[in-house]
Image 1 (cartoon, helix red, strand yellow):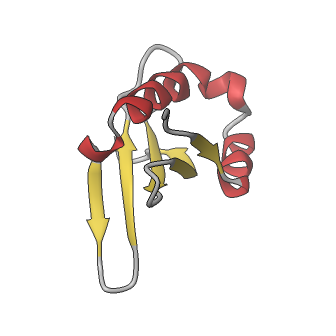
Image 2 (cartoon, rainbow, N blue to C red):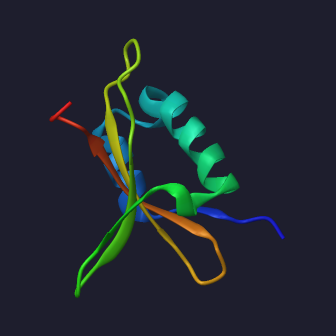
Image 3 (cartoon, rainbow, N blue to C red):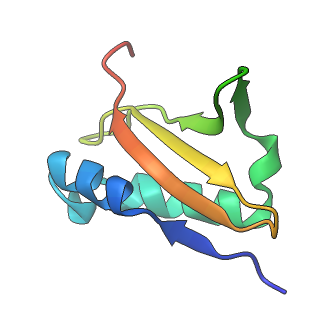
Length: 89
């Protein structure tokens, strides 16, 4: 059974704030492919109150560095939760 990649409403809203999917499509497509193969290899943040995984992309040409936050459900499905420009890069 293939894993599902789910786009949360909060992710769609964050993408809109960055200029829409067309503005960041190349980075998102690459990350989604990697998440579909094995999301468990990405960085994990855990505390007593929250747990999430994240990806930080490198800037390429006209595309800024991005931080993408996601979660993995019990069934192995991935939910993209948030994306923002990495201003620290």
